[in-house]
Length: 118
Length: 108
Image 1 (cartoon, helix red, strand yellow):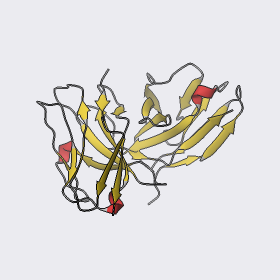
Image 2 (cartoon, helix red, strand yellow):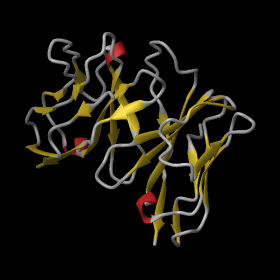
Image 3 (cartoon, one colour):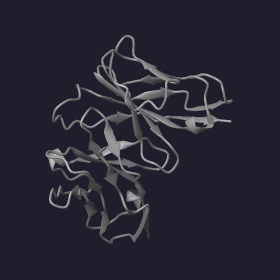
Image 4 (tube, chains in turn yellow, blue):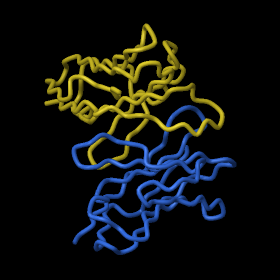
């Protein structure tokens, strides 16, 4: 079956431009996560959705970052007025059940969108 | 904040040699720990979870609460094991906290 897909795979933006990154999770997956991975680092959590509800956005680095999942499936991560420090790979992951307690459930990752801000 | 430490950035072993990728996590009463792997040009994928005590592709990882470690081991490394390996711990909320990763290179 189809896995998590992300588009675009590569995005080059000039500093100050707005960008929108799309994630299509595995069909029926309740949980959706966004991570940011800088060069040479592990992924760092940005935000989490359970269906359409954004339950945790504590990892968003600034108010220039905004994520939504209006119908509980596709999600969009928007970055306004991009800065050079926003250059990274943005990973989306989904999980079949809600995340809570001791679920032990792993996450299924997309291929990522590599954002380069010039 | 919870922290996952992978002390080795790069680990190089010969084919057939044993391999151990180290991971230490922040103390937690009931930690949830995972190993993820990323092969060249592929996406990040789950390798194993401590909760299931499974062996995948010959890899095992034992949770040692006394040492707060979750090292990944394989007795005989294969060239196809060359990849980036990330240890991750589920945080108090919903997020996975990842280590910085260890690049494993298995040479013939």
